[in-house]
Structures are given as C-alpha cells and as structure tokens.
Image (tube, rainbow, N blue to C red; front, side):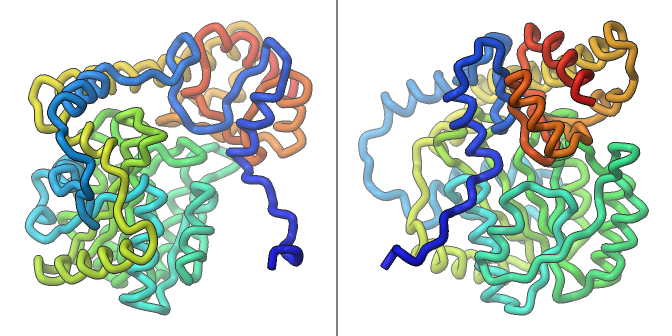
Length: 393
C-alpha cells in the first residue's frame, strides 16, 4: 500500500526545530518557529493561565464530551473579543476548533460546500499553511501582490489593483494584524478601501487574526476587522489563542461566520458542525476552558491584559534595540524597516543562500524565505545576531 509513496518534503518551519535541537553549538539562536520567548529564552505559561488552570482543576468534575461546537461560552468570548460594538454581533455564529489551522480548514470546507467554484485570494507572501489548507479543501488559490521587496512595506497600490479584479465568487484572505511572515500591516485606510471594493465587487472578506494584541494592542489590532464586519453583509474569520494566551500546544481556536441574518449564520454553523463531525468530531476542551475562565472573570481578564501588554511592549523594544545595535555599532540603516513592522515576524530580504549562511556559519535559524521571529530573541542575543546579519548581508 505504501511502497509507491514519494519521500515527503520537509516542512519549511517545523523541520528547523529538529535541526536546531540537534545543533551542538552553544551560540545557536532559534528564530524559526513562531513562539514567544521571554528574556530567559523560555516560552512561559502566562500567570492568568496558571491561575485559571487551578480554578479549572478545582471545579471541573467531568471529562465528558462537550459537543461538536466545543465550549459555547468560549465561542461567545472569541466573538466578543473581536466584534464587540459592531452590527455583526447580531448576525454571527462561531465554533471552537483545534487551533486556527483547524478553523482555516473548517471554513475552507464550508466554502467548498456553499460555493464549489470559490477562488481564495491570498497575499504574496502569506502564512505557509494558507495555500495548502485551502487547496486541501478543494479550492482554487490566487495571489495578490502585498509586500514590496524594495521598501519592505505593504505595496497598497498594487494590492488594491489586484483585488479590484476579485468578484462575487471570490474570497479575499487578509491578515487581521501582525502579517505573517512579513510583519508589514495594512493601515486603516487600506481596510476602508478593501471594504469598499468588497461592497462594490461582491467578494467575501476572510480575516485570519492569529496575533491580536501583539501589534498595537487588543483594541487597535481589531480596528480594521471591526470596520469591515460593520460594513459587509458576509465575512469569515479565524482566530487563535496560541499567541495571545500562550496556548500553543492546547490547539485552541475558533471559526466565525458573519452573515446577512441570524438564519443564514445558523445554517452555516449547522454545516460546520456536520463537517467537524466527519473530521475531528470535537475540539480539545482544556485550552478553551482556560480562556473561558479568564474572560469570565474581571480580575483574571485584567491580569491577562497586563501580561499581554507587557509582551507586546517587549516585542517593540526588541525591534528597537536590534535596529539601534545595527545603526550604532555597525553603521547601517539598511534594516531600519524592522522597527516599523509589527508582531512576531520580519522578513529580512535575504535569499535562501543567505539564510543558509546564517544557520551554518552562525547557528542562527530562520526560515528560508528570510523570515525571522523577533519574539525568539533575547536581549543577550541581539549583539551576536546583529553582527551575523551584517556579515551575511
């Protein structure tokens, strides 16, 4: 049965973790996989999560199935976190999923059932999982221009020019904030313009927001998404608790559908549950139980928001410190764009050969497309990393 299968290609990101672990050098730095690390180089369990975990352990009396939709209190909490104050609150439904990638697949499957000829437009570049998940759902994928290799910023004019050709059978996938892999985000004016194009041309916006709170803060990071949800009839959203709650291994996410009315989104949710039944059946509960506990407590919510704010401010500080090191000790402003990017990631503009040199000569692990995880840095790493970047550039 299996002898004819080809040798699989290595995952471009996850395979780096294996190579990093096997590297015996003391000066190695892992800037590959997208996890947040503190100043000691550890991915911490947030205090709010620890406190919520104590509550869950004390109060949870059963491990019986929760249901196909997962925890409905969690689902409502995710909707509130993203859409509070918008008209979409009256015409939305959500299901809990195994991470945001699970949500991507569920919504991909929903699109295939609801509109089989759907074309999904994805930014170039985009999150490495966007294209394969949409194609695995049987959908056609097209790319719109997004990132300028010259300015290292969003090429808004080129993006809007491409999206002006998207029509009623198309879905436009956008990053809610902290674009992966570039770190370059569209501004609010671009959100407004894309919304107008959706209204005019009839395409459906699909917002993947995996890093809310890591860019400019919880509320600011949702500003564009909320404007869009307030002004389009239909919209798809995926969200993740991996980064802003630190629940990476718990695989906690949600798939959200905004529709014309409650009847439509109720039907969409029913179809999502049927699709879930034939794949993973029910999502894991533990992470959702923790998030529900935090967001159901004013005290724990404030603890969580403070921790998240500190993480966001540290990311800003890491970018600033790295750019200062490059400017002051290496006399180069070539990488100043790093300071203007948001969230965890930045694309250096390096070739695959340069990224290989970083790894082989300096033990600095980044993705072959030039992406590095700023959140993987510690303050002590910065002089060494800056020196290596300059030597490879």
